[in-house]
Image (cartoon, rainbow over all chains, first blue to last red; front, top):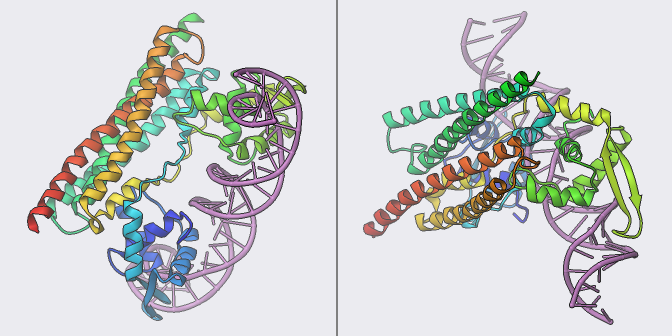
Length: 189
Length: 189
DNA sequence: GGTCTCATGTAAATAGTTACATGATTAT
DNA sequence: ATAATCATGTAACTATTTACATGAGACC
């Protein structure tokens, strides 16, 4: 695995939990690591093919019938090694690109009330995400100890909670400021 | 501008501050919106060509001599309109992909001390970014009122500050937990 | 004369999404 | 029967980075 295809490592990681099909991975990803990772079929299936040809994963079984044409993949020993060596490598810094901040930065060209709208919308999205995380946290507190309720899963959940709350806090702060800017403008007229 | 090329809007926004060359944009972007946006020449120059052919920007002057072969671009009225309509459109949700969280999630396959290393490294990066932002904040408090010290620029700065602090807080929280996991493991041996 | 910064640009590779095509099985 | 879900896969497009090529002027 020469390229830095993070998708490949996500797949290895997913298979380290247990054998899965491409379809399973998409499903599982959405409801477990969905708050910080996403994959599309367009990436998933070709990656599966690549990883198999490299011997990092292998087909455990291929069914026809129940679940028509289903391929179950399993991690090989080489695959686990590759996963391990990736985890401990420093994370590569990816360039930041935040569209909301970009819009806000050029905000003087539009009405402050219009900026409020887009910030409020972003706030709403974040609030719903936070509600989901709190729900997951509560569920995890009831069940215990088994994955994905491992301490590691909890750490990623805490990330969502801590950052999400900070995000809301920032939204509220600048919504106030935008409100003031709006009032000043209105009074000037 | 049919496609959702955000780079195009970033360029329009940059030119809304004043006429610039592609080279200027890269420089300016790094030291003003650098904490939430980045552009590469590979995106910049082709985008400039596209925007010009669409009449959203135009060449103000083309020099040879000082600054050899320099093209100064300027925003057209149509370009400003396009920028405005983009700003007020809701931000599109981009799929989240956080490599550090992905590694942490699959953390049980490696030593907790190795996880500490990658988290500490990420913490260091964030801490340096925060120091830069605080420096910019202090500078802005001294100069006043003119762009980019506008309230909008301040809002993006506050974002970096609020989120950055939350990030450090989370790092410290889980570094503690990783420390405990490490101790438990050591005691077991 | 050498190196640094200014300045523009392209080619190739990488990453990733979206939309579509196909077909089986299961539940209503 | 028909709709939903299971399941795999590809093609086309969009986005973006990296690395390179080129050359002028400024500074030492």
